[in-house]
Image (cartoon, rainbow, N blue to C red; front, side, top):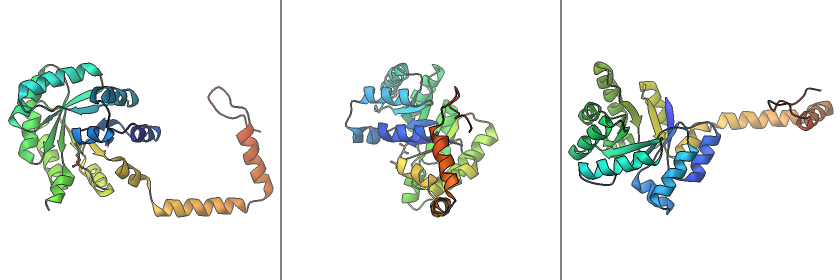
Length: 237
Ligand code: E4P
């Protein structure tokens, strides 16, 4: 399963990229507004930092407006995927933009039938919002399972991008179901790394290392100081 970062914050994006952890980025007007930056330059900067799809959301209510925005967004950078909402107008725009070869992420999906319509319109991604369903006491992950079954039954190529992820269990469940992608805030990505037994185990190993005879520490110091070869590998002593 691919992991996307749900953020428009460049520091968060740089950090996640440095872990080799993310395959793309999703944004929405709420996330962009938090950054207090001009929309288009910020989106271009995000595209330059990430080697993968970057979702950029249209803000028109009618199909004509979404199509116009979608064409302009797609021309900004090859990584851009245009986000259209799951409305009648959004489906019209998805159909047209997809015909033109522009990738569309159909967002704000809350039911299996909506996901079916997104796939028929030619969506590249569909974004079911699991956290917002959970907020209404509906199990968001059941929707992911339903979409997975429907898309497999009819061999739709639309990729399932699990969105509105709130915690690591959403991510693990999405992976078990076989969703294509999960997009998550930076705080959730950090939670995927953490485990108290990892931290406790590391502390124990490092304190035991301190009890080794002095030769071990000398070796460590000389290994760190040794010149590096072309591939960055230090010569052995
Ligand atoms: C991503 O594409 C969505 O816009 C995002 O995941 C929504 O998350 P939220 O429900 O936490 O706002």
